[in-house]
Image: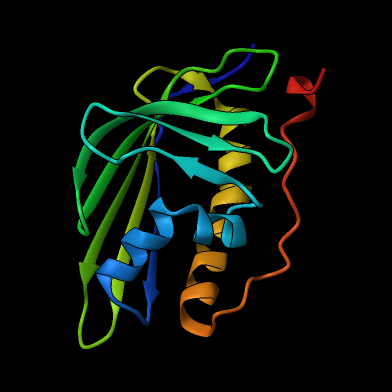
Length: 159
């Protein structure tokens, strides 16, 4: 029997930059293509607007709705993986961006699961998010992307 969970996962990272630059990097394809596995983002980033994450080959990866938008402090998104054969329950991704000193930003990123999901599905996010956030940090601090490999979904979801 598969164990179900509604467990949240939170990541905290400190970046030598400004809140405005973190916001721009999260909401602009000019940046996301460099740290989010080549993905582009599309939205006007206003509360209630649709948003999506597109793979380099043009396929839609993730779709959702902007639930909260307070530039450059907070962005809350519903997160629905669109390309897997099996429909996964919606997640909620929250980015909280706050100044943490002179030229330093604390970024809290939370992946919440309001609906129970099989616990093994947390593995994908737990492999991917650290690479994404490390890539964001590197890009904003050095101007260079990290050569991160694209994580693959769990074998049971690949069909």
